[in-house]
Amino acid sequence: MKKRIVIALGGNALGNTLKEQMEAVKKTSRAIADLVEAGHEVVVTHGNGPQVGMIQEAMDAFSAGSPMHPRIPLTVCVAMSQAYIGYDLQNALREELVNRGINKSVSTIITQVIVDKDDPSFKHPTKPIGNILTQEEVEYALLNNKPIINDSGRGFRRVVPSPKPLAIVELDSIKSLINAGKIVIACGGGGIPVVMEGEHLRGVPSVIDKDYASCVLAKNISADSLIILTAVEMAALYYGTPQQINLSTITTEEARQYIGQGHFGSGSMLPKVSAAIDFAESGENKETLITLLEKAKDGIDGKTGTRIVKGGKPDGAL
Ligand code: ADP
Ligand code: MG
Image (cartoon, rainbow, N blue to C red; front, side, top):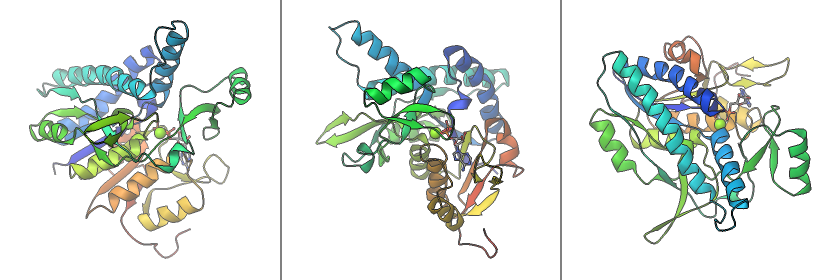
């Protein structure tokens, strides 16, 4: 059965450097092309944590060495990351489709996303960006009151506010392309965060989590599935401990209970599980899946990954 699928790609689907990204998008494109070949309508979103951090550092070094150029706003860095990742991804996907004899154009839409200027995250940053910091960089950040966070035990990274996405500014254009049978890459890096000031859209320095933005997009285009591809095969309880329990299919109520018990990393797995709950409850038969990029096909076939389905807490749940 033909489905409309939003595929949200995580950082590991994109690599950490320019060279890694060129390679990673090829593999990613194969997974996406499999779905297109199977007849599904596919819309691609992606994260930008490592990339936007890299761009911001480069831009900061540029303006520090060139007083004529003031600091480049974080929102402009997000826009740059959308273009840079979109460029690689749309080319790799185009080539993969051409090689399979599929004639479909792929385009990246620079996407702005409206947020609330009073979103609580502006006071409590949760979103890690950039690379894992060295011990020296951690000490420098602590001395200079620069916000950093321990990212799910992987090390310290810089952290920025991550407001919740409310609406997608370019939604009409995205819909037109999908309805015309085109493949769209949108909401990159969660979208460029903006607030409405009359007719003006003002960028606000922050990075939206792409999992939440993907959920807003999936709901707005009446998608059937939201598939979140990341660095782990399954969401887990007691993650990273000897007691780890991988979750296969859970109900939205169970998922809420596990969130309450603090099982999911705040800037990493929590946005995925929360987005999956929100999407699963947005209608009937809304499918959600969280799994590894390499397992996308198996996941869609129901062989692996974490599925969150609308419903209460079954008897015997943990
Ligand atoms: P992406 O770039 O795909 O958004 P993130 O790093 O934001 O990836 O989120 C995925 C990461 O979440 C995993 O690699 C893992 O380190 C972390 N994580 C935190 N809590 C959990 C959990 N309970 N189960 C699985 N992974 C978790
Ligand atoms: Mg993430």
